[in-house]
View 1 (cartoon, rainbow, N blue to C red):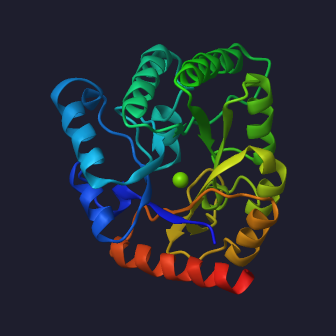
View 2 (view 1 turned 180 degrees about the vertical axis):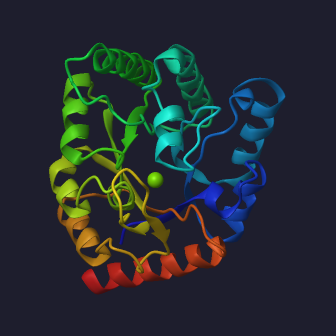
View 3 (view 1 turned 30 degrees about the horizontal axis):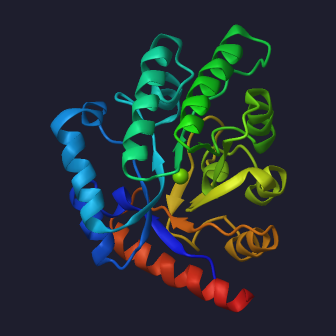
Length: 275
Ligand code: MG
């Protein structure tokens, strides 16, 4: 049985309270969502570290994010998300490096981020600049004994693999978010799993339905109610020798906590039926 964890800031958006909420819900292993950039220094950082430590939770992966990002719709994501926005790239690189130090202080050995929509031409100046910033981040993370995991789904597995191979650093892998391939309509999740196999170091269990029109987002739904074929997914992960946690992600919805509890039971049942 693989351990089951949760993205804690789905359960509770308040970054300090969330640690206690996850513990109350019976979780021991979590992924954390991004904090405001101002929390990476000073008093807020101290409070964050104290809350994380007091919870006793294991932070399997800390997600890096940046002020001003919006996932509201496709154009907002293109305009605001990740390390692909030229005028914000240097600043965001520095923010990503601060996250490494925060994670290090908490004993966290893996960080992850959405890079944003990749430039289409791998020979373009923009693509080369992206490779450069990812190498700088990966190298610092490596010095801190950490891996850097690119969150999947805003591009096909083939495009992501091309980027990882171009970055060419041993501590760069992926956090496989199977539903994102559906929500962004970029790939088939099981194909993606096959292609990214050895780079899959973390997994988000989320579900969704494909969008009706291109360049719009699909609809996230509770696990088991969408297009992700979880029984095959879990079987393939286990066959691949994946031994990390399955992290439940439920970003939106009227009853996130209930959905997370149901997802945990669903995943437990699936693993029992497989093993
Ligand atoms: Mg995710």
